[in-house]
Amino acid sequence: MSSGERSPLVLGIETSCDETSVGIVRGGELLANVISSSMELHRRFGGVVPEVAARAHLEAMPQVISEAIDKAGVTLDDLDAVAVTSGPGLAGALMVGVGAAKGLAQSLALPLYAVNHLVGHVSVELLRSEGRDLELPTMALLVSGGHTAILMVRDIVEDVTLVGDTIDDAAGEAFDKVARLLGLPYPGGPEIDRVAREGNPADYAFPRGLTHPKDRVQHRFNFSFSGLKTAVARWWEKNGDPENPQLVADVAASFQEAVADVLVSKAIDACQEHGVPRLVLGGGVAANSRVRSLAEERCAAAGIELRIPPLSLCTDNGAMIAALGAELIRRGRPGSDMSVSAEPTLNASIPQAGFPSHEEDPAQSEVQQRDVEDSAEQVEQVDDAFTGLVPKVAPASRRERKGQSTWLGTIALSPAFGIGVVPAILAVVFGHVSLGREEKRRGSVVIAVIAGYLGIAVSTVVGVILATPVIRSLLVAAGFLLN
Ligand code: ADP
Ligand code: MG
Image (tube, rainbow, N blue to C red; front, top):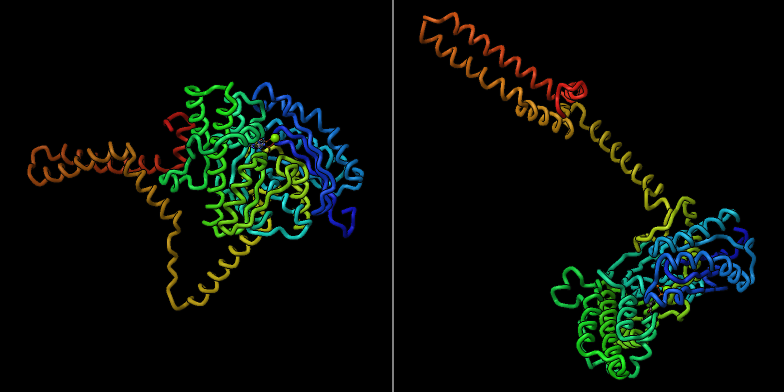
């Protein structure tokens, strides 16, 4: 680390959706957080278009990096590491960020930390706690246009669990779609938030997805917003009037109430179920005034400490990615492998991608290897202690026993054995019976009995040959047998 004893200077790149963002931190201290959004380009489509977002990242990246460097008052040479979101997110968008980060890390000979976007949202807390240890455990409710998830964080590097997820639309996506329905511009979340201030949230009781008692078994902490969106659409088709601002406000407020209610109640339920006394909010929807006020109200009532980052750190940003990178360094983690790539479906329980632990943790396998060696040694010691006392009868290993039964089974079922041996046995049995009874055709009966014995021998040999894998595969290869 070039900065000696000082905390590492980390540049973080975030491009999982429509924000091209670069943040720079020194340990837990935020130095710069530059965000350039391609939201305007998506406006006429009413939602993020992945290819448009990827191209916009490409165009914005150099400018955003140099702006962040200037703002932080550092130079590229001062950096100790580069961090980047490798997933989850839009594949093309992620690729641009990962490509840029690799190029930067490679050219500056710095370690690369490919990190998880969702865990990044929780890492904002590292900045707010200014490098002190993050207060854990905490639950995190992460709600944006692409994600709606509840994460349980017992350790931000070692122990993150996905407690709940959306089974269809993300909450932000529902805000955007319902806004379009009501004739409001994209992005719909802030628009609904704005018009809902004039509306009555109790006017329409829209459905709360996955809150039915039967859903508690499988989907207690999961979300579903597609039914809510359809319910609003059906209602609006019949009764809607975009020219009536009060109606728009009432529907917007009622829809927003349904979303806020289900988000907050499930997050608090997760805290209580897992005995976690803290809740962090993250993602663009955490900017929603009703989500915030309801979370404050209910967390206070339930004795849960609520943490909501400032807006610029709530939405997608590079600072949170840099903060997670700095934390990984502080915890002694090596950089990710340079072959790491964009991982659009990266699991929330993997804070760092391209790190050996997720394929095979060398430390872990060393421990396992030691365990195996230790137990082998113990077995040997016990064996030695019993030598001479108990006659050693080596029990057949499972594989041997399995092998035997396979052999016997194959011989018994072998068509050659089945077809050949039955008439042969019959010939032997009837031959012996006839020999005892008649004297006349004794010669031919003896021949029949001998043929019977021969038949048994031949079919057994053929059966054994066919049941022998090597011979069998040779016969198959030579075209004498079908596999
Ligand atoms: P992403 O870009 O991954 O979707 P963001 O953190 O940028 O994540 O969140 C954008 C989403 O947040 C959009 O769907 C937007 O409508 C929603 N959003 C932003 N502000 C608000 C708000 N005040 N109320 C509700 N939703 C909001
Ligand atoms: Mg966004």
